[in-house]
Length: 130
Image 1: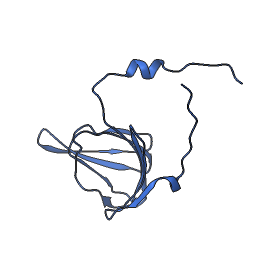
Image 2 (image 1 turned 90 degrees about the vertical axis):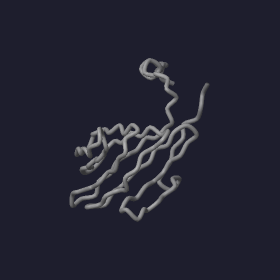
Image 3 (image 1 turned 30 degrees about the vertical axis):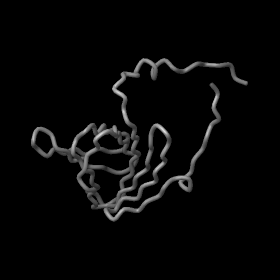
Image 4 (image 1 turned 180 degrees about the horizontal axis):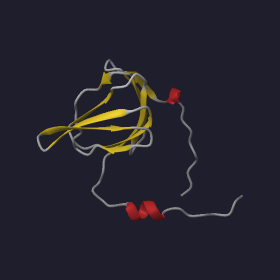
């Protein structure tokens, strides 16, 4: 099954400036979502959790501080560029405690409870160059 390659720019996204100091560009597709976030210095997002969505964050610029609830305690950890945060079903929030903006990409999907690692690792088919 051949599909055409697609390209998207910020103008194709749903762009939102939130009152909590976060600017988000949402790219929403049928089975997943990717959104680009920029969080202002000294900004804290609201505490929340997701009932069905799996959310994974990739920090691309600056430093992001994660807070989450675990075993009745509030835990925290700072993550910089290249750091990955898999949120799970935790009650969580993120903040930028620095003097510079932080940026991160969020990958969101609704998991089906099926381990697809083998498909993901082995699905590449090499073809001769045209």
